[in-house]
Image (cartoon, rainbow, N blue to C red; front, side, top):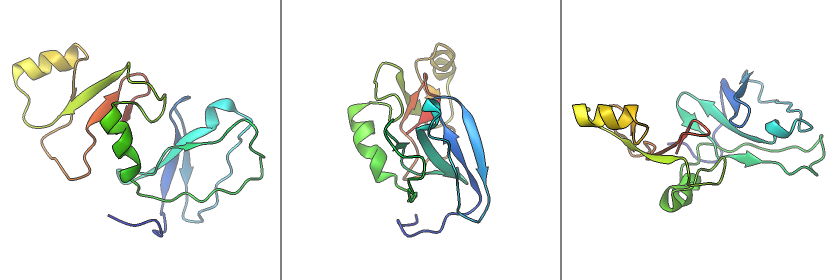
Length: 138
């Protein structure tokens, strides 16, 4: 795991509310049009790592400079404890992510939208919950 001083490489900015994506090069310079309301909430993804969710209020000036620090999995701990999505801030659409070889019962629960199958590989920072509304794991 990297710390806050990690230099970010090629990746993408993801706007989960609008499902838009912006691909990034290694320059580290990103221009986001904050006049688009759906672009005021975003996170950075590269190689399976996620930054924290960034939320810019409506009053943010368009030339504001923000430094994205990543990875920041501790940021998501409180959301997981409260079972609240970091994107929509609601718990209404949250389901657990279940790891391991799925049984027929797990497949039925997954198809019914009761659980999300996370695969067989579990890591220290594997997401524990999935928001069906925002298509976001945390």
